[in-house]
Length: 452
Image 1 (cartoon, one colour):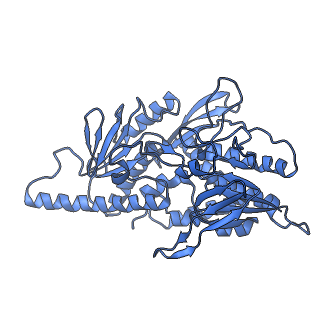
Image 2 (tube, helix red, strand yellow; image 1 turned 30 degrees about the horizontal axis):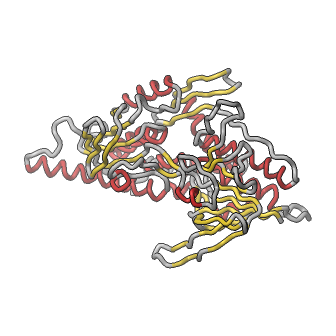
Image 3 (cartoon, helix red, strand yellow; image 1 turned 60 degrees about the horizontal axis):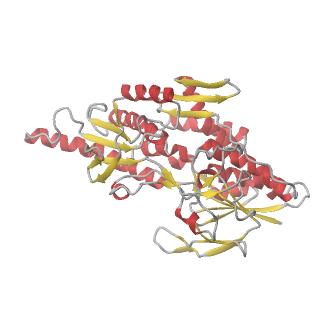
């Protein structure tokens, strides 16, 4: 059987492995499977990465939304191997996986090598700190569930601690913070979709924590949220009218925006900008950009771009090896074949979904010995969620005849539908509907944010 290996269980990689397993890996009636499909990921469970800001704010419990790769593999006819990609031997067609350790640091799985006929690399991206002094040491990234949960716990503790310190200073006389200053301030570096969505979610979290009695601070006055952006406006990748509408909504939520301020240093309790400003920051979240994982530059001569992504053709094959494909954030794929157009497919969830759907068809052509088609990216627009307060975005394509601004309940509904479509891609529409109902029932009996 042909051996497909998909490295990376993110939105694109998991959907690709699921659909390949359904189509070629499962035994159907008395027909033998045509391919052995293996998914590799360094973690045992999957969660949709665009939701990590909700995990960080506590508005989503990751343990009720995560999907076990082993269970998905059993249901959809592929195999799962846990491990981190650390090496590639293109001549022998083998990938090397690092050992897996348990919580106590003991070996759980050894160093392994797996053989492939077709390899698809979909390991996503990680936070880019741009070499800023102290950024990696003194700020929180939101690449994994563990990082998001760590920030959430620190946030709850900081709220409780700020109230206790406030009570102590009132009793003893002096006040720690100057009059009018927040008791607790969260700084978010980067005003892309993640930074903006997190800012809105944190305002909601501050209100809910107060309602449940975890602190008695004023959610708007005593808990400050500041977003620092080096560019001239927030959401620079989206149309200016979307940026303006979002800025107005954030202003109503008492979120302070600092644009045109490049961060030069992150230190304990503060952020310094290149313009000489100092921003107090009890907690700092770094959401200023992404980069490709460093391992890509070490994969047996596969060409990478200046951003560390694997350079691929419009077939999603690497330039030096037709048996190796890449998709998602880790791949630099041209948007089109037009001469003079050097733009690459943007690192968005919709791009990974489109590329996964494309590869299901293209790898079928490969099994049949047919010429591979070329991938064409279609921008459907972008949506930014501001929690239960609102949502805003733009729709693109033939359906709306160009570009259309949407906000409010309609945009909120459409944003929520994106995740539901991801679930449908993994389980089908009937199970997605059941999962939606189950999720709604769980939310009816749980607090609005995670409190512990």
